Image (cartoon, rainbow, N blue to C red; front, side, top):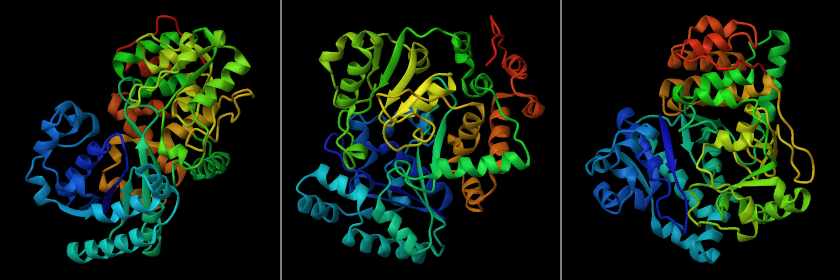
Length: 430
């Protein structure tokens, strides 16, 4: 039995992970499992959230996007929901002086009372469900959950929406048994991939071949711009103005990043892309001349820049996929293969690393809540097994003949595109 864990503290939105809660609710109902979530998620009727305009509660497109069945009020009574009480979290908030302080604390430290609560809930779930917990699935890396799981020998699966996703790409997810924002999984698994590759070479994909596989059919025309000449030296990809995942560890923020970029490159040589979902609506007036105002896709923004820089955005891996250099300033899945300083040159990973990241580290989003897949990953399959399982999945999803998987690197692009009904107007190779 896999148990989703839904938790976040925010002064902007009481339920920032409503979509994740409803995906967890659907998963638990379908698999006779359980979900641990905060009181507001578990006890607020779906109809109330719908009336308040939360699209996750009533918009079919939102449910389709994240892969769950739209919930009903009665589902909250049918599901095995284990509630994190408001008074427990309220005590932590009171003790730390603010919601933000409390969240930063819980993102970095183990809380004794919370730990006792989670251990009791863990045992209660196994007793009432008469089944052992095989793993927790969480969108937030909370050390207290990690410690409770460790004490009982239960793995914790950390995930996040992948760097390649809707609207341009097939949806992927980060999948990690460590903290996504501080662990060493990418480095460790890359070394394991290289060891396996030396013994028996993988079928490595060129970056354009990866794009042919991940781009949605109606976006394959973006490949025509692959050799586009950058208009600016550097492009900055911004996040939320205030983001606890960052502020819990460092005071470095987007404002300082922009300051240092301007100092090194000059405002005339930089392009800035604000986060489209930033709830704070950051303006950065002193950089107004550099802010991208064109309504275009992330790939089109990336292609207009020689180097992409961010604090911890997955856009840095996306940039390398498009042949651009990248600088990632803080630990995150993009960090290992990137440059790390504004004042130094960025790095662009080669085809072998991009293939590893695409087909080993990232997973198809649809696999995230697939019990058979999760159980298989707990068996610690080799990188080769993971690599070819994911490749086969994507090829079949796109309707591309799987025999092309073992073709020579750089030689299958045309056939991959033809299988999708597309032909490059000007064929170019990596």
